Length: 95
Image (cartoon, rainbow, N blue to C red; front, side, top):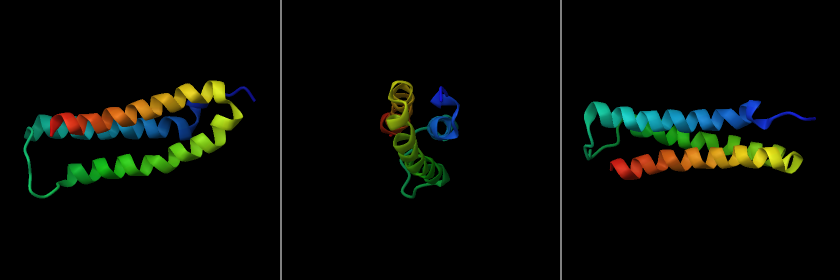
């Protein structure tokens, strides 16, 4: 089976969720500015949901594809981790 793992939903869904979380942070900062609120708003809850829900999907990808095709799955996993860290860093930079 010579399937490029990036085509699989377990590969591209976490990356899409990380990009969506990054966009939530950027759009919230663009619209409302960097404001320290006492209560977390909806944007914070959406960000937390997107970042948390993708972890089991990445875990499934690791269990299924890293053992089966490590040469092609490892760069995809690196992209997933990199985008996850980028989204987390955006919160650290903007707060």
